[in-house]
Length: 339
Image 1 (cartoon, helix red, strand yellow):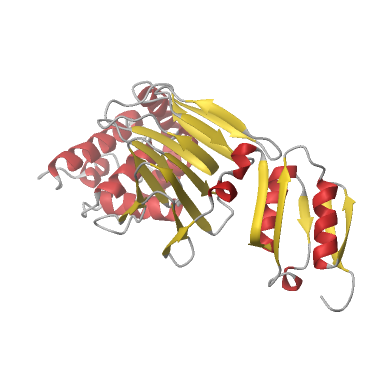
Image 2: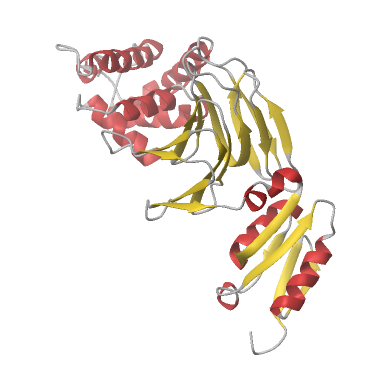
């Protein structure tokens, strides 16, 4: 992500055309307190300026120019960020380091006072959580999931940010769309029930619609017009992060939202998917030779509170493997050569 956003920043600095999505990403990066070190590094890489520069004004100027660009859909004639900055190029960049660092932190803190403040809720491994948002939307969080959301939503759009898996019951509001942002896919809704699985360490993002209507928006910063796909009730859209393909499937509801009802359900599931779910459900690490299990599939149903040993006994019997538990890890080894 850093490489992409810096590329956008450089193109904006050179007064080249940027899409609305690119400008949104650039503004978000500039105003993110956690990114201020990256912003500082970017500034120092491109400009040598004197200690006389007002870095707070500098960043504010860049941010305002982005907003003007968005409003006018073209660079403002006669305005050059690079030209303004070159006025201050008198001494080596290292003299500016403490000033820029302080300026960015101060600007971000001041800017964030006027923007939405977000709360982050985390459901750690081995646990689940449920929250109710300011608009009445109910959200169930699966294990190893975090979500960021505002105390009060913007008047035009309700934005939340998800890393992991969650089930949403969105309060209907035709004038205020609800948007779930993930790493590469956004889900835009008015009011509905749906499940999103978007773990950072998994290669697919899966969105399943139970009722209502949602649109899937692909976050392709290089595209002038983002790809948007309507999802039908009972349909699951799986987006591959590796080949960027979108596949539509019908889905069994009990399997998709079983975790919400404290059930862990596998129906002819791949062993790799089973392992990932078990690791999050029981907060353990499963160690095994993936080559031995590539073609293995399993069907099993567990309820929350059932001992991990029961599942491991089923796996041991069905797949002909031995297991042992050592220091938070479950180690699987084949029982015989016919594995």
